[in-house]
Length: 181
Image (cartoon, rainbow, N blue to C red; front, top):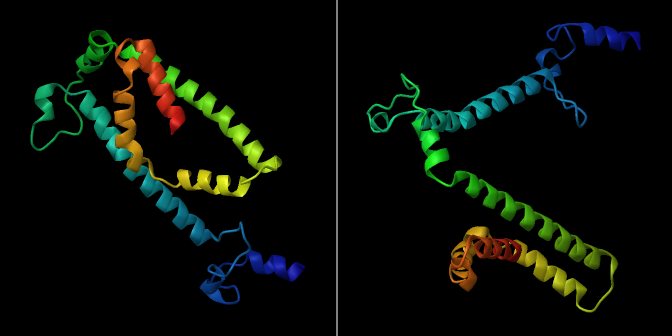
């Protein structure tokens, strides 16, 4: 036991096997210092790469219209222009759009959780004819990519007769479309 502790406290070059000690196979869940450093480095690079478009969007939203078309583009505006945000809040029904989004997202989520939980319970606990065949059909419909059904769903909602009458009916159409997915 004492020799193992002594070996672990030695430097990597002095250990038996030299630098190969750092790259030895390890049990699951234990990464070596080189792998850990490499993983953190990759995570930092990916995080920076993903934050660049967000920074550009924020920077562009704080520019005047004349600065948007300049070449080469200026990443950081010389003066901040808040008119884009005031125009969004006071010249458009933005708060109504946010409320509509919350209503549709909340109702679709709650209804889907309820129905999907009931279906999952039925498939897991109940015995009925063609249970396996129906389960395969459910799994197969989940494999269809959303982009393949996006246009037909758009036409379904667009041609929904109540969608043009009022905001309330339009929200009903959106909720029905969300449940159908």
